[in-house]
Each structure stands twice: as C-alpha cells, then as structure tokens.
Image (cartoon, rainbow, N blue to C red; front, side, top):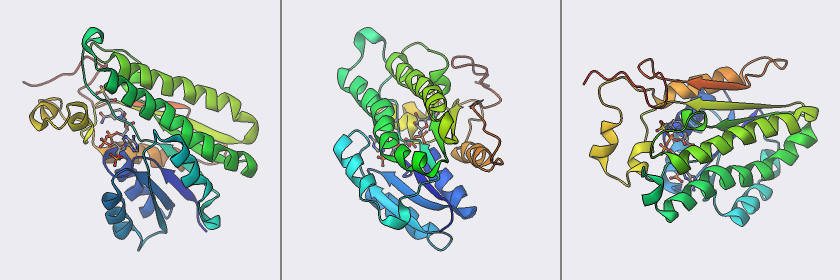
Length: 251
Ligand code: NDP
Ligand code: 8X3
C-alpha cells in the first residue's frame, strides 16, 4: 500500500482541502470528523484516486478515539502522516464574560483531542521508526489578541506540544511540524460565532484572506521534502495581515 495519511477534521476547510490535495498526490487517506455524511461524500469523490477510510468520531471522546484507532483494519495500521487539524474557536469574548462551555469545548477539542489522537497513533510511528506529524496551530498560538484568551491559550498549547513532540520523538526519526495560519476563510468564523453568517463574513471583508487550499499546498510541500529535511515551524499569513491584530482592510 502507498503512504497513509490520517487527517482529523476533514469534513470542512483546511482538513478537507488537504485530503483532496493528498489524494491527488496518491496518498491513501483516513479521514475523520463528526459529520459522517460529509466524510462519505468526500470518500466517494476521492476513492477513484486512492483508498479512503472514514472514521466518525468527536476528538473530545477519549475512549471512542482510542477504540477507533486501535480497531483500524490491519492494512491501515501503519500511518505515515498524521495531520492534527480538528479544532475550532468557540466565542470571542473578554475573559470576564466568557462561557465556560466554550472554554471546555476549545480545551477539550483543540488540546486534549489532539493529544488523544496523537497518543493512539504515535506508538505505530515509533515502531516503524518513522512518520510525520503536522499539528495545525495558528497565529493565535504565537500571539494573544483581545477577546481571544482561551482560543489563543489552546493554540499556544498546540505550539508547545509540537515542540515537545519534536524533542521526544527525535530518537525515532519522526518528523514534527507546526503549521500556523493567519486568517483563512473556512467555516471557522461561522463556528466561532455560532452560525451567525453575517458576523462571520465580516471577518474576511476588505482584504483577500487565505483559502484552505493555500494551507493544503503548504502542508503538501512540507510532507514532500526529502527524508533528511523537516520544516519545523511555519507561519502563513494573507499578504494583508501583519500580525494577529493588524490587517490592512480597504474598507
Ligand atoms: P472549519 O470549521 O472549516 O473545520 C474544522 C474541522 O475540525 C471540521 O472538519 C470539524 O469537523 C473538525 N472538528 C472540530 N471540532 C471537532 C471535534 N470535537 N471532533 C472532531 N472533529 C472536529 O475550520 P478550519 O478548516 O479553518 O480549521 C481547521 C484548523 O485550522 C483548526 O484547528 C483551526 O483552529 C485552525 N486554524 C484556522 C484558521 C482560520 O482562520 N480558519 C487559522 C489558523 C488555524 P466536524 O464538525 O464534522 O466534526
Ligand atoms: C484562526 C485565526 O486570528 O481568527 O486561528 O485566531 S484567528
């Protein structure tokens, strides 16, 4: 079997675009998310090119994640690439007004979920003495912006875990990369603002944001480097964005 990539959060945005680009490059895929119908549609559209396995789970459910990965069919067990992409922001409020449910959602999904998936997949990479883990962080993991508090904290944790993984997995020839995008137009803001499409669209007004495909192309570039090269850490911004808070908007 050709190389296998495991992509969490493949039902939308960056994860979906990455699945499409990896399939175009002959990489077999394990695609995950909570929305099973979307995973099936994606499987249908990619399976002429590569083998595609779908796993429907919520990354916050530790036992479900463990069981799904432990029970992978034998031919799917040797995962070469892990793209830890599942995650979202929930809310944008000053800390004193924040919702504890939103906080738990972000910490449980963006941090603990990433750990549950990694914990289940890393032993196979250690046994193979190889593999590549890409953690999708954010500019919010490099800087803190007003009202971003807990989302920023969750992405700072992803940044620290990426460094920790690179250090600990170094003896086993496992590559670890942190990919940190700025503003990418996906369903991200729709989720952050709980389905308020007008509020979400304003985030991307007056400048040209990144697309999910822009990030997928960077991910494929990183994965396709020769064995002796690893991109450790990369921040990708729209040209109009200079920092988490400075965006050159026309209006
Ligand atoms: P989308 O909302 O379009 O996609 C998020 C994906 O994550 C979906 O496939 C969703 O699947 C999955 N997901 C979210 N929560 C869970 C969960 N609890 N269990 C399983 N899957 C989950 O947003 P993006 O594509 O933009 O986001 C992808 C990653 O990129 C996230 O980690 C985000 O923080 C990061 N990022 C995004 C930026 C942006 O500006 N858009 C910038 C920087 C980083 P489903 O709902 O089907 O479960
Ligand atoms: C997503 C980018 O700036 O909305 O991580 O936090 S931002």
